[in-house]
Length: 295
Ligand code: NAP
Image 1 (cartoon, rainbow, N blue to C red):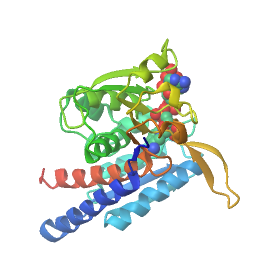
Image 2: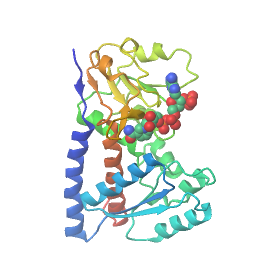
Image 3: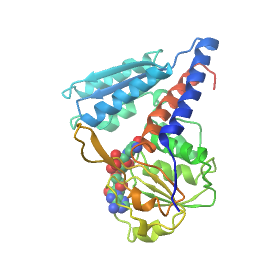
Image 4: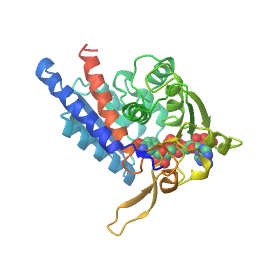
């Protein structure tokens, strides 16, 4: 058996079409244009490419977009002042500060300074708390994208054994939490593994749905999963450079061997990645609607 590929590219395309319609409607009926500002500090190549992709996607969808590129030497005080400016700016409904930040800047202080109503990354403690309580909030983009992928691919999650590898604040912890909630793509029994887990294979082998977010290329092999498993591979690992100078990427799952055993699998690239940016756009539109009293 060869797995059905869950194409993040295709699902993201469908969601972006829906968003285009919503954005056009917002403008025509309510004179509201969603606005997003992306803030980059320094020149980390991966961050530059993420921020550029986010601004480009926003523009393509009809979202008003500003991109602020700051030098790596920018002080924390200057960054906080910039965030405060955008917190007050009515044109802007979403503020995204690209992580990681240079070492001299306290990441938590910066993220906590963003108005929770403009926190379209869903990293502010107010939104994290609401997420855990199952209240309306901005869901963090990568987990949000995973939920959409599962739902739109018709993967049943209710009553399933979900095993998550990795306990980061941006992927592992939130997706584990969301999938145990009473909600679409939820109601699962969830196990969260990390580097101190005693017998990770024991858990991966009994997973109905395995979500890997560890950052170790091709870590999970076919003999560590059961037949029919659903694989969501979040890992984006640069394993080399092509002759044309493009990064060669691998996921956390050994795609070639595992796809022969799985029922569904996400590829890398073209899986979770395109969904993350798309959910950022969806959150920005949600924020604009909330600000206009339309939600
Ligand atoms: P992270 O902060 O890099 O942390 C990695 C997590 O994996 C840690 O919790 C670590 O455990 C755990 N881990 C490492 N090796 C492990 C192993 N052998 N078995 C079990 N757990 C292990 O995590 P992240 O930021 O979520 O990133 C993970 C991967 O996802 C990276 O490749 C990243 O580039 C990718 N990513 C992709 C997207 C996307 O949009 N596609 C978005 C975000 C992240 P400890 O806590 O014990 O150290």
